[in-house]
Image (cartoon, rainbow, N blue to C red; front, side):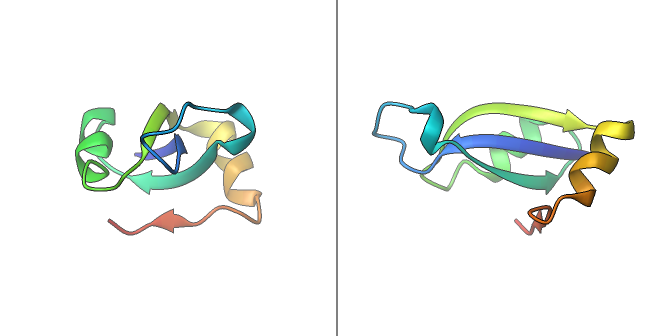
Length: 69
C-alpha cells in the first residue's frame, strides 16, 4: 500500500499549516510507516492511505516520488 505522510520538518516547533510537507511511502500499514520514519526528526501530522482514483491522481502529480526508507 502507498501512504501519503503529512509532516513538519522540525519536531520541536509548533505545527504551522503553511510549513506542512508531504512524502509518499510504501508500507504494510500506518503503524509500519510511523516506525520507518521514527528515526527522523519529523512531527508527523497525518498518515493517509492512497488507493483507487485518489492514488492515480497523486501519481499524476509532478511531486509524486516514493520515498526509499
